[in-house]
Length: 144
Image: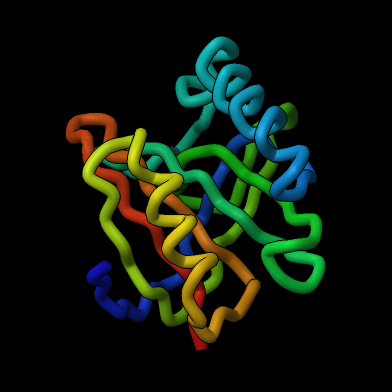
């Protein structure tokens, strides 16, 4: 599977978050997506960067992909200020391996490829970027 290496700047995110692992995440992550859209979370986020989509962030890892992590679902904002009922987070600047899933349904295949290969991961932040205008999803894997 092909990927590119990018050096990213800090990205401010506002949205909802939950603490999970890869076992509980099977049910908790879809519930977070449902809550995000049914609660009109995207519309509640102030100071959104125009033209940006939805970010699904995996961060605050307890070790590696087998431990608990925080899942943040939100949008990029221009400032770090966040309305009271939402959570703020900064995807830290760093080096990322960037994969492309051809559709939302193919995202899990990319993650399976990542888990089956020996990437030198940072376990600081990984994220998916969903541009709602196109079917492709970008997966950003924090690497050393």
